[in-house]
Image (cartoon, rainbow over the protein chains, first blue to last red):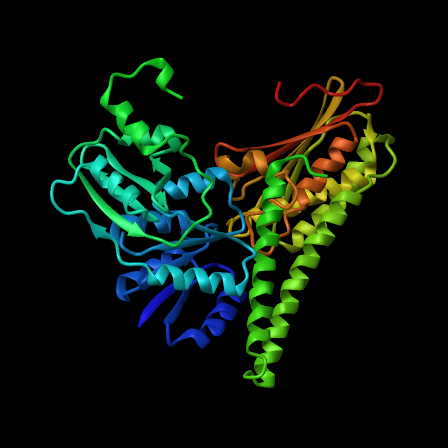
Length: 228
Length: 230
């Protein structure tokens, strides 16, 4: 049985959602927590398959919770449910590998659909062998995948590439997204790549060039005119 | 209506959360209506009404702030005004166990404004201090006033918890509050009243803890006061 954890400081929302999801208990169980700290307590003790979290909460906010999940339980997907999404916030979430954002108010059916879609996705899988970053990226393009690639480089940190139907549509590392993030990461060597499938998202594409363009660009000396 | 994006953000957040709770609550009730017994149906409806009440409170707050009309601006003597204010404030604060001390300028003088609006503004500041001193051992408010050239400066200092530096720029924004049970209108109403009287207000933290609110009003025959930032 799958288990989801809904984290929000809106008590009535938690109460109603928990009762509403009882009709779907053949598919998943629901646990609730009123802030990030309470959620971490549950995550320490209970196996959870998906976290749905608000951002602005007392004690520990959602952003901190997502950071902790990324560091300690990176295989758990996260859906962010917020009344206050902004482009800046979405950028920050992309850089934490959490691209699934739902704006409040959300309908019960949409929330349920997103939860079930996320639960269906396969757990993250590591690309084995000496797969270079460019090969890993090209593979997603050829296979027309909708997924994220978490790329860990010992000396450089962690970044994310996002593919929609095989098209590289977004990337994020540190505070950078879009083309600058691709340029930052495309030259990384000796990386560990984890592929995470996720349902189709409504991405506002941040990448304005093809994957081949960036690979070609990285392979030749840069000129000012290239930096578009 | 509002003078900062902070107010818009706060309202969006508050309304978004409440409308979300209301939406989910009503949808779950409708989907399961035939399966729920009467008690649980009532619980769902009561919770829905709570959310409507929360939204109504926000709307009333918006209306209150928007329709706030300070009284007619005129010249009035400061000393009789502040004596009346102190008498009322002292009674209010005594009930709360708060000591009030004051330091007033000698001699007479008049300011330009509206005494009722100034009184309301000062009481909002007192209420704000009371909240900040809720866990202070020996709560104290020091009120001082002085003529500073073309204006009168009033300072109200408390020994409460102070205001985190990162939120200082936002505290006069409507609906900005650090407390769940507070709509966050008191300081914004104060700022609006003072601004209407061609005055200024600013807030700062004291080195030993606590907050000071400093406001300036034009003295009679004076030009509008210089910026408090100077």
